[in-house]
Amino acid sequence: MMRKLQLILVSFAGVMIVVILILVKTVELPVKGNNTSISENYLIGWTDEEGEQVSLYQSFEKGTEKHTFTRMINGNTVNGREMCLITHNMSFKVLLGDKVIYSYAPELGGLYGKRYGEALHIVNLPAFSDNRQLSIEAVSLSDDGTSGCDEAYLMHANDFIDDVRQKSGIKFALCVMTFLFGLLLFVVGIVEDKFQGKMIETMCLGAITMIVSAWVGSQTMILRTIVQNSAMLRVVEYTSLMVLPIPVLMFVAAYTRNCDDKRVMSLIIASALNTIFTVSLVCMGLGDYYDYLFITHIIIATGVCLIIHIVVISMLRNKIDRRKSIYLVSALTVLMLSGILDMVMYYVENTNGTAYLTVIGLIVFASILAVYEYQHIIEIQIMSSKAELMQTLAMKDPLTDIGSRTAFVAHEKSLMEKKTGKCLFVHFDVNNLKHVNDVYGHAEGDRIIIGAANVIKAGFSDYGKVYRVGGDEFFAILEQATCQEDYNLGIAKFTRAQLEYNTKEDPPVHLSIAYGMAEYNCSEQNPESAERLADSRMYEKKREMKAQQ
Image (cartoon, rainbow, N blue to C red; front, side, top):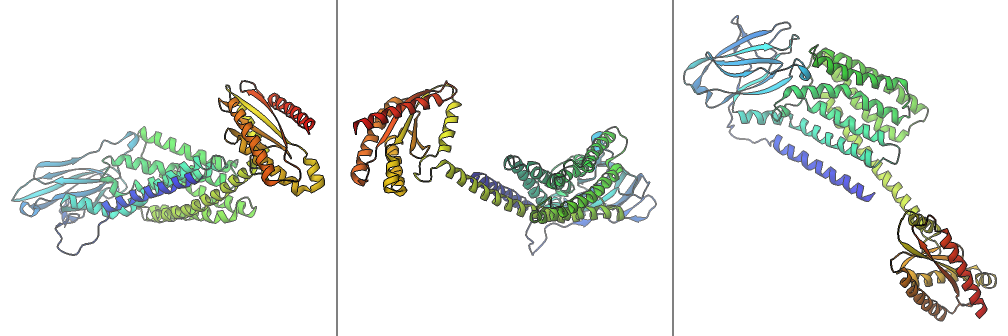
């Protein structure tokens, strides 16, 4: 268990290093002084086909498809800079005079749907020294008024990319950190909870964390500077949202012991079918992910209501641990509320996947889960330590500190699993113990038993295992290939140790131990016959010893 805890801590340290490296790359310390990057805002200063001054931001009204925007620029003012753009759901060409210097027409359709979301563009302007007309011929890929240009600057490309990374760096780092935390949680769910009946709960928590992180992370602009296929990021965004209710509902059902609830299963099936049918319809060209998003929102809203109902009823009926519920219910509540508020803002303000509140909810969710899992691991560690202690106590004889009968039986079972080899069973029995107990008391009898254990251990512990299997009965099991030679050496050491004990301790009744040995072939199915033979020979030895008294 300690090794597993160490693994988790090392993994956490590794995650933190990854996050720090991301922050180093994406977050810069503000520096006072001269700004070497001169930028011009190119969102404004454009003229449309009718000669009106317009902005490129949200350039298209609902239902419009094409627009041409123009402006005059002087080559001497370009000064080696590029035109840097972030566009949203539009294809376009950039012309300098009559020459096309940049074109962006993504091949959509199929899995990608009819839109690509946001994309980053760096337009290299050729060198010139006179005044020329710069034009953008744009075609909308949507008819809801969301196509356009989100940012446009004339500046050095490296500075623009650094600015983009800085703006979304913290958000992206958070997504990476929480995704790795969710992955770690998912693995812990498989490894740690496998034998505790809570594997599904922990795995679901890990899946929830990973899915929400993927959903939020797919919307960060920093990924556009890394991944060229912005359409695929949009696929990740929508499919993550569609499958999210599945692990959430599975977790709540498992945690509240309502896995057989038909309402939960119905919503899980509905989420799965929604994902399958939406992707299938989009691939067939019958719409876009955006067109079917309302179905996902309905399923999420219904799921939230059902979760609240199940959790409240389960707490009232004491079906879940109240203390643990504080952590898990709080985490899910914060995440769900933030998601619902973002969903409401999506419809009220017609926003496009900013998910600002969900980011905050994700931070709180991951933090609460981290605290919960930390306490959960500590509890498991304590329970495991107690179990190991109980196991150790069960395997040790409390009076003599050698192997107990439980340990002897476990050793027997291990021998029965072997197919080849042999071993020796040596049975020991203390003579005259009843006489010692009756005349000198049980304290003296216990001293004799302890002395016998020490004598047997001195003789055979170097060659095998020694056990106390009854009041005054002991066994030694010798498994080495040289077990017969070891037995002879052990008997010699055992005899000397017994003589030394009687000389040094000088008990009122000298220690006398009878013994008998039998060989066991591991190809046999049961060692009981060898034990009986050892027992029989031990009693022969006992009779022989009594006859010599």
